[in-house]
Length: 148
Image (cartoon, rainbow, N blue to C red):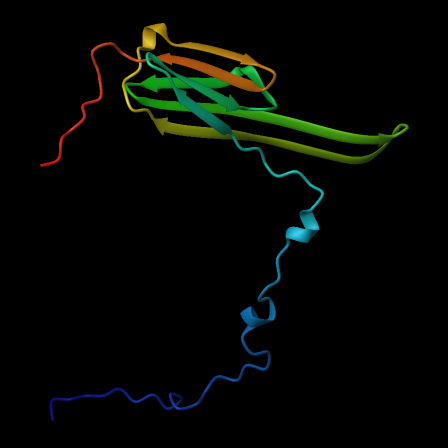
């Protein structure tokens, strides 16, 4: 007599649901066609190329001002962040037909194969493209391991 069981008087009854599973009603439904003509929030696209003595990074940051872009380099870790402001307004004479705004931050961080010489690094921003020239730190070469 050491087994106690809790009795549930409604345990055998199933719950009445006149609509069935509500998730089945929306299966396959997406909002993508509704937003077809609208632009998505901005993302930062990055190209990284390596040369013998440096890395070249190109980051597309349209809609950002030079003062709103921040780049930090710590060893071989590179972080780029920017505040993006985009405003678009369509008018028909003096009457505004459509006005769209986006304010937000974009951020990318990545790791390079070698440490960067921070004192010789250069940054240039023109036409929505940030170009970073990141020289490799002398003496910190990548070591190739032989597998036995």
